[in-house]
Image 1 (cartoon, helix red, strand yellow):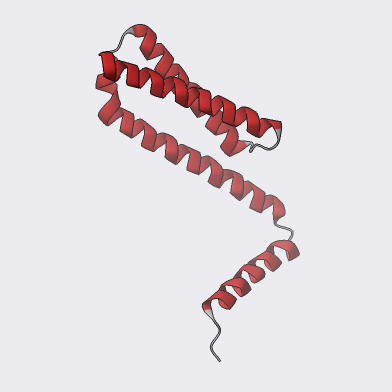
Image 2 (cartoon, rainbow, N blue to C red):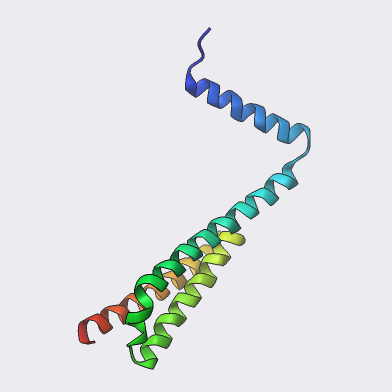
Length: 120
């Protein structure tokens, strides 16, 4: 008897869910989820660092001190904001604050970068 791939996948998910419920592994599952979110955040941070090291550091180093502070401050605040999102999670007013802070950081960073490219 041939079972469709969709049905087979749903049966596998149901079996895993049943094992989690029967063995009372909800705490372990939530811990694994937190570790995965943390690992994903660290992977994003590593890629951003490598991109900065290879391309951005020399160009940003030639900017004036005030523009460097604004740019790096916006990036640091965005990293803290993203860490809060990945580790704690956001909902309701926290989500609004998350998006407002992220938008302000992106605006400040992009505006500073574009001004330096245009006039520098």
